[in-house]
Length: 429
Image 1: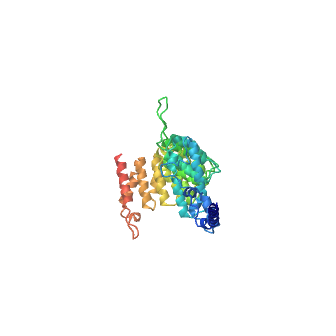
Image 2: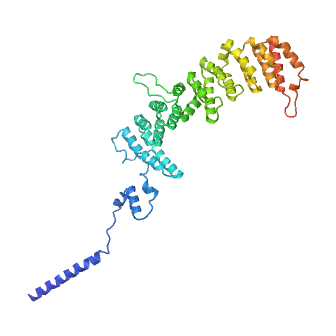
Image 3: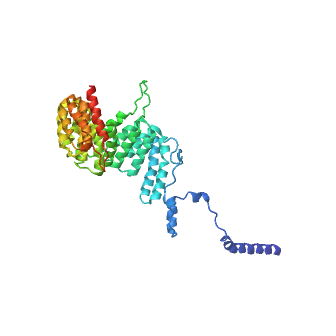
């Protein structure tokens, strides 16, 4: 009995020792970290913790999760079963965040963020034409950041489907859209040339976007008298290559640039006048002739009109009864040899025999280039009655000071050759 009591006392003492010593031993061991819990921490939480500890958060802690790799979709963002519009909208939520973040960063960081946004091009394009309506909605949403709207147009153009053309046209004609956005839509419309619609179920030929469709939409957009400068320049630059048959809007824009345009206005006026020159309607020729009243005599704007009319030979010849007297008057008013030479070329294109007297009169001008052009004009209209004048001029060319070489100018052999060629052409008739 005594031995049993002794054993019990010993066990109680040991238990008390362990209870007293356990806290002092357990504090030496720390709870192991859970790597999964650490990975689940959000960038925002990491930034908050860093600031609380007196540390400056790294740029990586302030950004959204990285963009998907090129040509793939993030499964967390695009779970199976979602529609193309859902996918596009979720992607643009991230793009909006990246765009807003880039507004507060330096150039290098902005470039890096743009590259990350660029990685979304292929995932969006992989959605096909089903994504086009959603991209159009983003591009035309005034509450979206401008840069996000520009990315939407870029992604839509990458799809290369016939259905993309209509949203681009809508953005170009959207009076409330920023000028940069409308200009970008115009530039992407040019990239749509050659894109065709899938063949119809009835077996008809597929419709394709050709040069004529793009030209027609560009020329129609010029009717907007408040077209922003970036979009206006883009449209006029394209119109200058292919022309616009509706000359009214072009005449309005040319006059809006003033009688002595400079810098961008001068370039836009140049584009608009070339668009009239390459138009296929006679109305455009009449508008060019009316511009004589807009640009002063001797101005570079007037010379630009002369240059444009040189592409209108058929129209000028068809209107010779009214055009020939007008050009003769303009020729008399021109103060310098450059303008005189250009008007003489136009007068020769009209091919009016009644203008022979004008050409003979300019054989007496001081500038040899003008004289040579007048001689060529006489040959162009077949004025055989001017042969004596040309023979007399050619016979005295060696003694004529106008055709002699000077210290600062070589002998104008080209002008002499033109007189001789004109005389030979008239004799050959």
